[in-house]
Amino acid sequence: MDFVSLKDYLASVRAAVANHVEADVWVRAEISELRVNGSGHCYLTLVEKEESGKMNVCAKVSAIIWANLYNMVAPMFESVTRQPLQRGMTVLVRVSPNFHEAFGFSLIISDIDPTFTLGDMARRRQEVIDKLKADGVWDMNRELQFPSLPQRVAVISSETAAGFGDFVNQLENNARHFKFYWHLFPAVMQGDGAPASIMSALDEVYAHSDLFDVVVIVRGGGASADMLAFDDYDLASCCAQFPLPIVSGVGHERDTCVVDMVAWRRCKTPTAVGAMLVECMEQAYARLEELALLLDSETRQLLQDEKNRLASAHLVLAKTVPLKLSAEKTLLTNLCAALRVAVANECKGAENRLHNKMADLKSVVRLAAHSAESHIGTLIPRLSQASRSLVGLQQAKVELLAQKVDLLSPQKLLEKGYTLTLKNGKIVRSASCLEKGERVETVFADGRRTSIVE
Picture 1 (cartoon, rainbow, N blue to C red):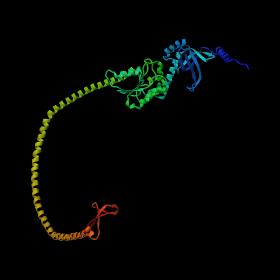
Picture 2: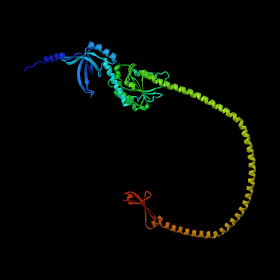
Picture 3: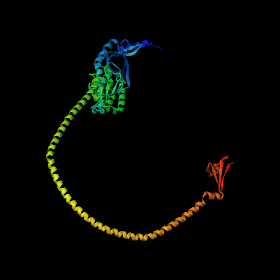
Picture 4: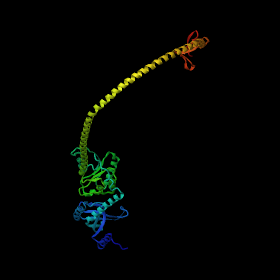
């Protein structure tokens, strides 16, 4: 049987690849892994995923950017895209095939087109924006009414972030010493885990939403690549639908992310977020001062108007009161005279009526007294007879009761031969109440005896 060595076979494969696979071809792929070793060489894994299933890899290959080229390509790529080469990016790279008997097949990258990646990032961001608009949530947070006094602030940030410290310093050291009540809900603000961490913090705020007026999401500094988390669809949708106004301060002056777009307001930096809240308080304070001045002015004018009205009323009263009093005095005098005449006439008539009534009353009293005297004379004999009968009846009842009492007296019972047994001076009513050896006393009609129970 004829055979060749593995080395010779793979050498023929290497030659075939070198002779028949086209070199310097532009290839679109996604970076699934990336690492730079100590020598400065960049090792990547490039993949292509099926359109029908974003997680299904249909092609995969290793690739290398040699150190001398990587040191030129990487800074140029970042200056254009404002993002470093990193996992998850879709890139357009110029490649040549490379096959080695010991290390297998790989691609040698000789160039990268940063404008392609920049366009792909913009396309992805636009897809997120279009989906939020299609879902009908794009404007929801911006349509909320922002509070006039945003004093109770829920802060979502990393506890160690410099931007968080700048924000707090802006609140607590404002010129007018406005008081803010803030609470930090810690979250990861960069990297793959940032969207889920920030949404978890938003869930905590939502559970206590009645304690806050506004939510701020702040972070400061860092690379532009850190901003990719804030283009995440789920995070942006959560922010857009949140029931409290959200103020974002997550980027730099030149960077705007999707979360900035759906938030109630976007500020360039955490310091600017704090300044905006202080400015809201300033505006409310100014409005209150204006209202206080207006109230003072209106009150003074009202008091002056009332003072003038009272002065006018005083002049009118000074003229009309004496005339009114004179007329009332005359009327009262006439009424008093008429009242005296009427009272005198009424008294005279009442006196005559009273005299006639007294005469009639004396006649009626005499007749009634005579009639009562005759009636009493007939009742006395009848009352005397009834009293004697009642007394006799009651006396007979008393005698009958006395006989019964005498028959039932204890002495009579003892004389008939009955006895009473006493223990400790108390009557014994049952044999079960006595025990052997106890002393008892027996009462007879003619005396008492003591005995011992056997």
